[in-house]
Image (tube, rainbow over all chains, first blue to last red; front, side):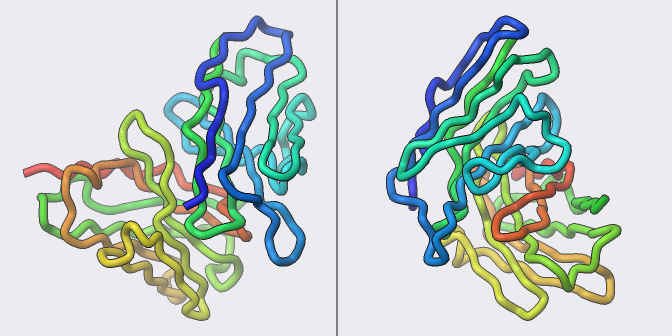
Length: 111
Length: 115
């Protein structure tokens, strides 16, 4: 299985300040069609995961533009340009290129 | 807005069978793939498998010998069956709409394996 390694595992941020989460995959994530199926999910306390970013850098509908994704090869990053109180939760990267899909350990973001 | 709702017993005895159903609203189950993912308490996420109405299915090799995912187009539902459960199968089980990867998730169903 592809191992997804996130860092840091915990992040304490002051409102309005930026935050960055790193995700590294144990294998390349380029699919046979050339796409890279690297996604980011947010899980707020007591809620189910919500996808924020798909294919490295595409924001899902309704996701604030303070969230952005980037990366290539085996290194990917989720950035929050200015953290807000509602951003508290656990963030997961997930690869959908190789089966089984695998998730990072999660990064807990606190204010 | 597509809605997914998991349902099924919240308590299953060891060695018995876990069965969950996901009811899909405001979308035809004949479109998209549909998947199951689980999350043990306080832990991360694990993909279980997915299904398409054409019969295309795929299961996580770590669970393949015990898992079946099926689909009922007449009820717009899909289901998960996990045999010979143990305490390690205690988790929140999520169903999700899947467009190459899960994009919309249900609220989750907590299943505890205990005698």
